[in-house]
Length: 148
Image (cartoon, rainbow, N blue to C red; front, side):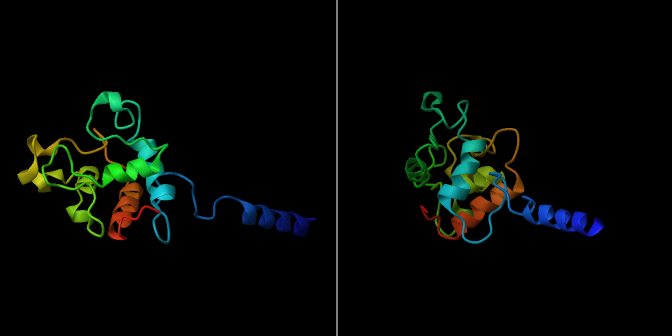
């Protein structure tokens, strides 16, 4: 009987969802980072809310309508409206990507480009994205910021 219980326990443990993989938008992926599968869910959960960048009526200058990943990708390819000449994403170079600076809280690095003091707040306001999310975005940019 004990043997059968032990075997059942092993089978249940082997089929559980605790394999280290997660579907959380904050979990750093392994392998190549996918814009649609890894980055867009982070933006949807943390940035594209109706009070922030998910609503064009707010006129925040950056619109992340995550139901259309192609439009989000296009939006991230442009220059910042608050830092003259600073591109949101510089493929292959997170340190030169204004979007990454905003989520890391290093937007002051672009101070010579800023139209407002300190180039504004760290995003999201009042807090930072979890480290795993910031690392996913950093890796996506470092890997070439592909629209994949």
